[in-house]
Amino acid sequence: MSHTPAGIRQTQKLRTRQALLDAALALLEHQSLSSLGLREVTRAAGVTPTAFYRHFEDTAALGVALVEETLGSLHGLIAAVLAETGDSEERLDRSVAVIARHVGAQPAHFRFIAREQHGGVGPVRAAIAAQLRRFAEEVACALGQEPGAAGWSEEDLLMLGGLYVDHMVITTSTLLEAGPEGEAEVVRVARRRLRLVTIGRAHWLDEAAQDGIART
Image 1: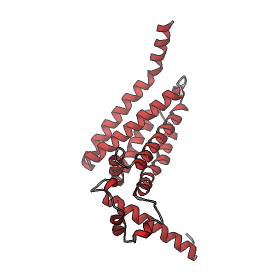
Image 2: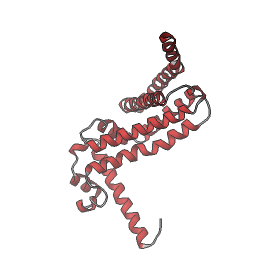
Image 3: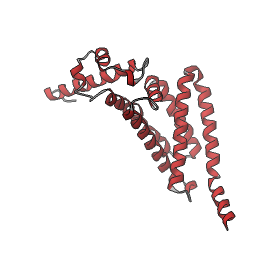
């Protein structure tokens, strides 16, 4: 970052924004976003209420920023796992490890996502849903490049990607409930469930072929 006056101001602006996000996240450990007051956040962050509006339009916009902070960084990590060589089961196992590591490192962030996914703030619900759709599309794209995806329709690949993402969401919630002492068992069960989906995936086109035979 530049040490010019403009660079120093930009650094301070970023620090203030992060302070607001961190303060909100701490407060959200004990309440929902819909009940969070702007003055609560600014008081906890040590800034004036007017400073809040230099960064966010309202608390809903702050919540959307927290969604992006929590889930945005995962896209690159999951993409890297899916791009690795090896069979899909191994890669999906590694994706479980990535999720477990992030939940362990940022439990407050993921508790916020788990609570607000079906919460009362519409823009935040929409932001979470958009991130999950993007995950499903990315997984579907990666699976579609595998030899085993020959004959699969785009619709079915997206359905499969959605199943894996739904599994990710369930695993995240279960990890939060289990805590560090229960993580190993949650990861074990998550991997077994992924294997079950993978086995079903291997036979999905068998059913389509049988339907075709039945109609002839």
